Length: 158
Image 1 (cartoon, rainbow, N blue to C red):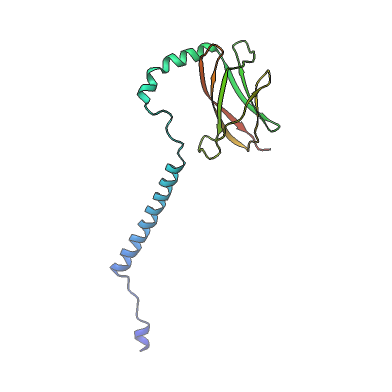
Image 2 (image 1 turned 45 degrees about the horizontal axis):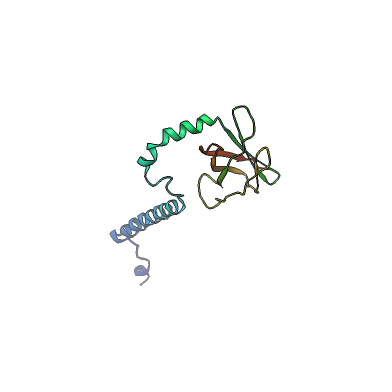
């Protein structure tokens, strides 16, 4: 009876099949989880119809470049400062400013700062953690020209 209890366990085709299916099952499950996470965090489309948007792109770009604006952003002391200057370096006040502040990789941190013009720049209260931030801004010049730009802001640690 002792010999039967100590009988060698054989590696059968069923064992191989279970290991094979289990390994590929893990691979497929991980791929599905990663794909679902990528789609769930994608911010979405920029425009509904790229062909229609492209028809006026050159006109809008030329009008925007004719303004000669230089836009920059910085963060200091709990404030987000968005500076818009003309070709002569003078501060610009716009008729309308919309901005979305967020990360480049996801939309979970997106928010709309409440910018106020202080005579030199647009300022909003924002506590920003270290890393790369984007400000996607839309402004309207006093003459009605639309201006759109993505402003990259890097916040260093400490």
